[in-house]
Image (cartoon, rainbow, N blue to C red):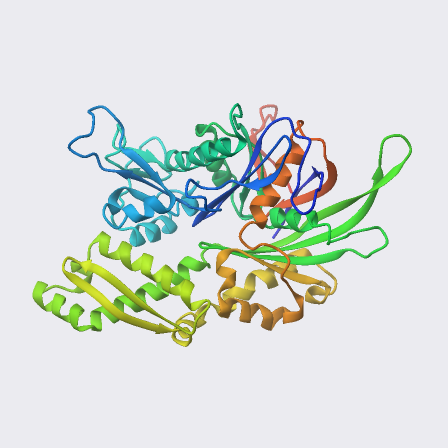
Length: 487
């Protein structure tokens, strides 16, 4: 796999761990994940802060919903929009106009198998036919023309985050500049789709930064992590397992002497992403699906489930509704979270079907780990691929530590597999797994903005896809194609 590298300069002025100062305008960093959206803000005279939701939470579920109009609704007005957990709660009543976990669909052709998998999970949602564009659009009664393009739905979520950031910044601040995280494997089409959504939301994307590079910047910000000319470079693995995908990035941290003003030299920290490995489907959602299937089988075998099948005279798959499956998925996520800290959990769903409850769906951690054992090799594969792509002479022996980020990385059997590969003594525990990426992205934005006076950290990020251009030469007499590639 070949890599396209981009060298850039990032700057910050540190006060404690996350302080950034001397900015004359507000800048927001956004970590747009599959399951959650996180944002952080830096503005004049205020340290870098996480943007809270309206419920004072530090992250928001990545979902948007439209509440159906009632009999008292004013004619000509738009349906009420709900975001985050409020949107997910509405899925239990109106699953046909609730849109969660949209990130994997960005820039993807509507015929792609990932779209089919998404619709299988959210069976109440329907694709809309759009002759002008091959990407995803959804049917929706909330739209004046009966459909929403995926970018529009994402833009609404980003606009909500922007509004929360402006509320935190205070009166008189209008946020226009942002930096957004993306997986290193995102294609140009996927990045363009996210950029389009940001533009619709009124945001100018200063740059995209890979998740691994963002976490690496956050790690380099910590004054306890010193890098100088007298110490050898350090190599760390940033292992990020979220809800929808897994990425491992090999990052080199070193001190470097560069020319300062006049004839003086100065030492700066250089952060270089050397190699990346990834799995586009491996993540918390895949584990949730196993739990969801387990709970469904438990219900089918329960007295209530058998009675329902007998009364309806049809297979359970033809009986349960979109609301039923929304409740199953929600309970599966809750149960899996409990199993990360406990040896067993019990799944229960009120009104999984009208007047039918599901009780006592007990599952042990051992059962959960048995049903997910097929993923063990996939858990460590991104690490081995990243090591290979980084071309380190000593391979895994050259790695100083592994930094775990992403919510699904807390899963015990995931950590056990990783420890089995790198050893427990090399697992770093001084990075906030939830917020490292968004802090690093905001950090990057402060460095790019002309309104911030800051200290230098140099970043070399990567994309795992070649960037190329092919065109027909006009000056060629024989009309042969000429290919140009930037690698």
